[in-house]
Length: 298
Image 1 (cartoon, one colour):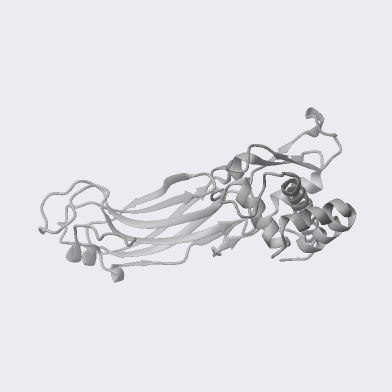
Image 2 (cartoon, rainbow, N blue to C red):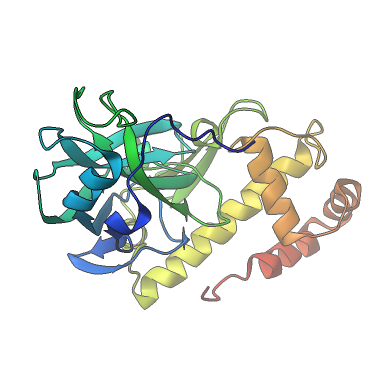
């Protein structure tokens, strides 16, 4: 269904020029890609976007008076958490051409799934006067641009916590543990948790360097990813209620397991996979290791 046009005059496309979203790592900017495969929930995102607004052209095209207050805003949404918020608002001058750098640091624990970034030019306050077809209400959108980035790419989307295993029920020398809870329609973010042992410094450092990994970090991360994938695939095959044809809903543990099975074993039935796992668990584990492509760089 197409969106209905607003009952007021919009700003023309040429009145606002938005540059690409930039992702800052150690204050060094780079263009934000369509997918961040190494992102995890402990990684905040520092973002920036340069925007140029021809305020005079906007007022001329919309019929707004000089007293009308205009604001440029950055709004983000995350499908993994279901959250939405305005991260940065910048009031614009009454006339001239405004050059604005929208910037924000998005907290990793509030993100997940598909990150939506929306740049909007809005009427900041209720406005009287102007032309008959001019916008009036505060919050009226005069121009908008959207960008989406998938966090973790095809990897499972779930949070990571660093804890002291000596204070848990798990062996104190273990490196990590995958907790799985809830039913197949539970949101992945709430159903899965990767616990990392804080005593394993090489492992903790690799997680912290995930956005810009060193060679040693790549080896550690590859090992963890492969083991997490094995754990999730085995969990799916052992759960007799799990089915590849059921619609569990977006961003659920069921859909995450379906994506993993489909990625590692395309066009193979659950019955066949369960039979192979039951007949030769070690051979099946090696096949899964091959499918995950352990130690290969993406």
